[in-house]
Image 1 (cartoon, helix red, strand yellow):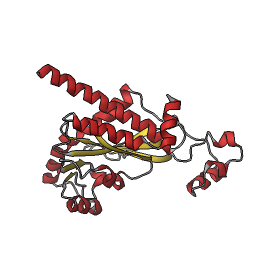
Image 2 (cartoon, helix red, strand yellow):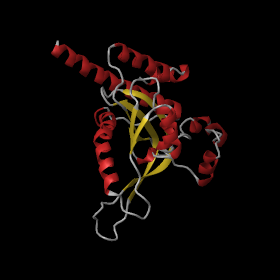
Image 3 (cartoon, rainbow, N blue to C red):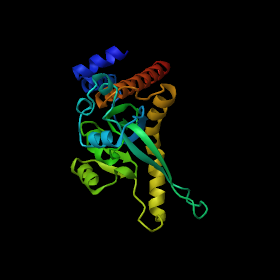
Image 4 (cartoon, rainbow, N blue to C red):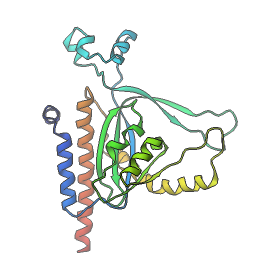
Length: 252
């Protein structure tokens, strides 16, 4: 399997392969309709044991061969993965003094867009874990499919994203942020709650990949991570295709 993935990486065909399978799904009658749902999930990678000097050189954009003279050591060092902090908000009625939970995470981030009707992964992108979710919206949302409504969480709410969606004739259902230092208005809370019921479906691919497939990155570099995650996305789509085809046969 590793050799096969390595050939895909060297050929640079992961995006073409994913797009070709997507076209086959469309040709089978499963059009992307009723909306696009966007989200991201952290994918863990092996933690690197680095000195402060090595960390500084990685942040400066140096390659592994520039940092380590020993080629065997350099080949085992991942200079693409990054640390990030995943925050979990405290409960609204938590006792006074409780703080938000901050969990450090090292690795990559899988960004996907699924369609609301059939729930296939229609586009994806892999970045290091430190990349902001909202900055990836334009690379995930598609303007060439019938689905013209977009759902996403507050990380994607920005003036730039709203302007981009409007410019391309797309309707935004992105969650609204809570005003800083003020309680969330009741009408906004209700609107976000309604959006959450639809947005929650995008968590299903991540849950399936992590729990059933055991998805994690144990390779070196962003290119290999993209192949690993891209293949997991295709496997999920194949699973969805089998499900829909089975339902079609049952109804025939």
